[in-house]
Length: 360
Image (cartoon, rainbow, N blue to C red; front, side):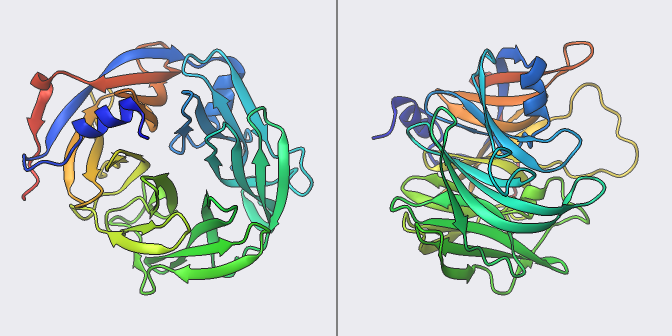
């Protein structure tokens, strides 16, 4: 059964024949991140956050002065408490790297992590060993550490989804010239390899530009919603691959318009909300305050652009979308020097909305 706030929010975003509109977001609350929690969160990949039904925010946390995620940090919206789920006390993973994590409905956590055999001088992992699926309970206790028989031949894993029967799937990519190949591997509950699929055998263009604004454009993500698994890269050039709860490919969905690159994908009701990348401009860019952040909303049946949220805050990724509120983590430009904070926002009044010109 859907929670009441999901029903209300899904209704508000229901597909219609009206042209898409721009809907301004307004801040309802800001909470500063300070001390150890600020370090844990801001050294992580802020664009890859999740939230549970209790309102906790989960974010990867990166070793200081390195580039490998070594923990997942869970913290409250008011930043008064936090819990660290670390891999560094586990055999083979003392210097390991987290690939992805998935929340359980009971507050537990699944983590996919890789043993690192060699780092470069910049602490970038350059050689990996074994891969493990870790299971934590709500209190952070490690319930199991399962060896995963991952076939990493020409394949970089980036995403994890655990299936209802204990089986699980790992998605990733392979780069070849200007194309990206999306790969899916399925495993039994014992960690043994089952099947491997290349979902786009001809490959798909990696990016519209010479460089990508974030690695989400390259690295596939998986999201559980609506009794399905949605596998997507951060670009509307690549279709969304829609899998059943058992991990079987059912269909694909092409988002429109083409050429949009994004990160922070979140699904609520029958819609996909993302944070759109800015197109790099030539010359010197003069700014009077923070840049505009655009958050397009796509319908997951038609693939069409429904509406678009926007605001002007230096936030680095959408964490939660619930109770009509959007939660971000970013820099508060109203303080000197700018400090890190949790932002909560909601759509402004209808008077601040205007139609989007899409060419449709």
